[in-house]
Every structure is written in C-alpha cells, then in structure tokens.
Length: 144
Image 1 (cartoon, rainbow, N blue to C red):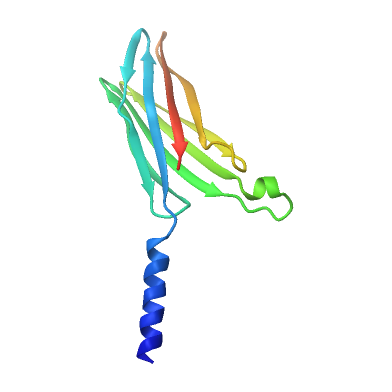
Image 2 (image 1 turned 180 degrees about the vertical axis):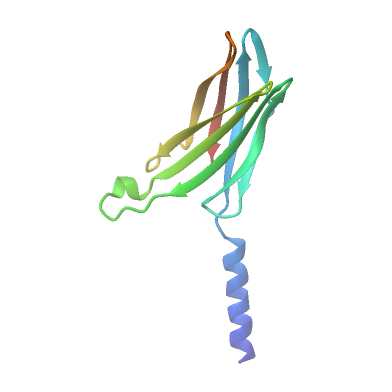
C-alpha cells in the first residue's frame, strides 16, 4: 500500500512540475502624446496555467497612464482543425491622460504554428472642451 502511495505521490509531483505556464511579453512600448514621445518599460505577465488573465501597468509617464488586462484562451472546435489549435489573446487597454479616461479592446487570434507575436497600435482622442489631445499607443506583444 505504501508503495502505491509513493508511486502516486511521485506521479503527482511530476505532473505539477510540468504544468503549462504562459508568458505574455510586451516590448517596445511607445506613446506619442501630441508632439511628445513617451517610452515605457518592457513588461512580462506570467500566467500560472496555459490559459488565464492578469493585468499590469504598461506605461506611466507624466500624466499618462496605460494599464492592460491580458486574457489568453485556447479554442476548441470539433469541426475545424485550423480553429482547434487557435490561441485567442484579448487585451483591454485602460488609458488615462490628465483627468480623462478611455478604454479599448484588442483581440488577436493566432492559428496553428503561426508566430504568436504581433504589433498593436491604438489611437485615443481625449476631448476637453474644444481642445483635442491625441494619444497614439504602440507596442509589440508575444505569447510564449
């Protein structure tokens, strides 16, 4: 009986140590605020499993803050082998410039053995009376 328990415990420890982990890496974070160029640090989100979600601060410069909520999900489709191995990445971008806030959602779908990286560029317009404050955010995202 002890032998089976030790064997079961060893198998369980091996399974836990090889559990799939996913990393989402944000690089080359840049924002163009009117004429000013803002740069952010490279950020990595570590998910404990193959799927999940987490959020982090992407850019904080002056009165501009950008937070991102990233969600990774795999798709299961019995009718299509192409869609069956797809990885969905959903990014919610929460942007604040001064006292104005905006939110946008970006979805990327990576199929089969396609490189799981891409470039995201979003334009935000913050209106304060008659004044417009354009903010262009761009970064590269990679799933490992």
